[in-house]
Length: 112
Length: 114
Image 1 (cartoon, rainbow over the protein chains, first blue to last red):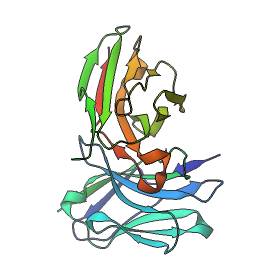
Image 2 (image 1 turned 90 degrees about the vertical axis):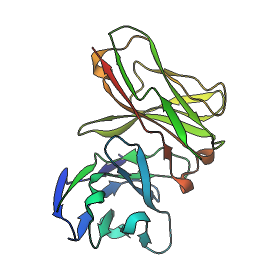
Image 3 (image 1 turned 30 degrees about the vertical axis):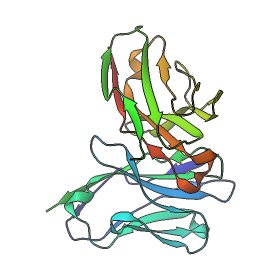
């Protein structure tokens, strides 16, 4: 079955610390992978996406993600977190014309 | 500005009273979709539309209807809302059902059914 797992429901980090949010997927075809961010009271904004090629992709707001086919993972990273990064983060997977399947989200809290 | 516009942002209604949540996009996107977001469940697809007059069920279509008479609009209809439809709803669109571009999301509609 197609699925996306975000094992961490809630993560707390200090401002300036590094961040890694985990995402594992199960998908039959070659997947398209996405990370979205949802700030409080807002819709979802696309952070970055991976289709093919270089397995390390850069996104907006200083985020990056690495696709590891052998581990079926697409983890999101940021070297130094800012207080404004506090939000909920969703990993999603899909195929060329297929719907997006979302994970259950990881809520990030940032302490000063 | 390219955007997906949902209305209303907040809605409180009573069980059984028909309601419509509107969704409009100005990007000439063919593909549109409705999701509901519930704590611990992430986003689940309700209905989607590949183009005008073409709609299909997603994962949780029970209790909902949609229509796609015009390319830009994709309203979500709850003909007899129930409390288990209390949720945060998002409309999204993309070009030609091609995920190369990801989805553009609306700001959401928080619905409470009492």
